[in-house]
Image 1 (cartoon, rainbow, N blue to C red):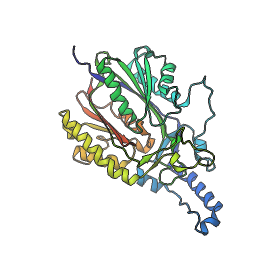
Image 2: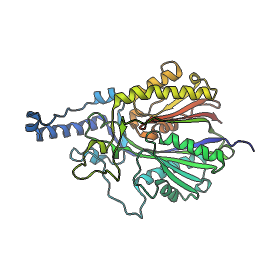
Image 3: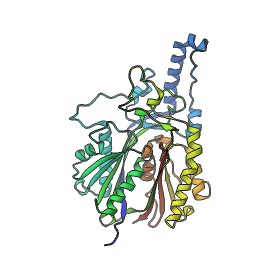
Image 4: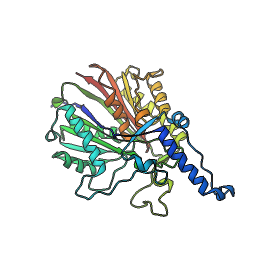
Length: 375
């Protein structure tokens, strides 16, 4: 029996229509800072409370390269009295917010591949923050699409999508499924502390989908999955402590560790060499020259990290063509970032071109998916 080859048949993308520019974000944040400092003027003067510093567009763009981000619910985020997304709780009979945007991305992928839901065997919901513990978001997405088979959730933070792609590819190779949807609905605005100057600009919302299938059923134009590699190394440098055992209460609602927190400089210093070495080593194992990779679709977290990783892999400063960026307009969308870059910047490649989808983030976690264009 010949080995089954998994491929990426199509990808899908849902982009929320609302956009927050850096100018808008800074105006909102600085209004909050001015109000906070005024309300605490006496305590600040007495040295009991630290004075907050305002932000600026220049600071944000220098620190991250981000210029704007899409969000699901813009008005409350920009309200200095709220500074967080807010939704009315939906009844259990209605589709949840996370599943709703995941379904939109999944339908886009199915349409691009010319697939019906009946053609799909499984749904993996791979994202950094699930809306609830159970029922699994994947099963809700499966139900909404009308897919028979099975589904489950997986969370490896910013590497969830690449971990999901390898898992889907393994199911295909083993013959347990012929077609698997990996859906990554990322409502990152919900776990971001919009009142923290060092991180309030980082995240945006989006949903992506990747259709992984057996080559025998794939459309003529597809991406062969040449090889994948996953890696995790425990670190507290990126953390979120929100959960049912330690969820926020009225007394701790603003506790920083119940939202996204990171030691950015440590992350930069430790993750860049780890990911670059991982890519180079896996390319060698696959018999590939990393310098010959036509395009790198890297995790969209930080412009400086991507620049250094690409330089170490390719052996030279990467051009925008070699390592495209969506970070500037989407912000950090966790596991969806590298998939957005792949979705938007792959149509011009020709048959035989090699590329790399790569993610890295909290855990630490990192995933590589080497692909070859077939058309």
